[in-house]
Length: 198
Image 1 (cartoon, rainbow, N blue to C red):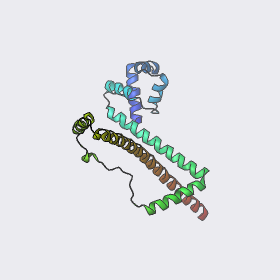
Image 2: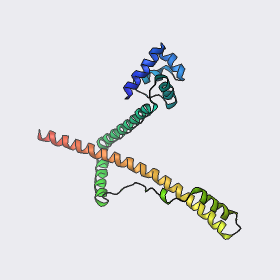
Image 3: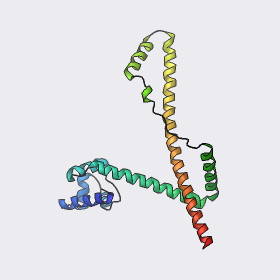
């Protein structure tokens, strides 16, 4: 199923009930404009609303969520492509610098990956760790303050690692954008060469 089929099914369901878009919208707590956008395949209903519609029509919620994910990916790609075009048109020198930098980086770091290794196999069973920590923290020894310092340090390290993962995601998106800029620059260069030849 695609978004147009979803829109068709929503429209068919509404008309089978004999309801206007206003009345149908009231049934799901949305405006007539929202129903109009659903039926034009411009917007996917919220998950809770989609779930109610799926129950009533026999549609599969996983299909609707797949359509939502596809729309999100299309929007992201469209934004990246638009930005790549904008950079190439409005800042050709900056685009050239980015292209040159990307060429140097890929030459100096071939195959470098940003993926974080799965460390779950090294994990200590949580209950064991909690029990041992509790015993040490209840003791009246120097180990208690040392453990407390380590817990704070490890907590900070975990938080930093999570933040780093977020930064790695941003870098990945920037690399995707750079690839689009490179692709657009290559296409524009080919068009320019073709117009010079012709």
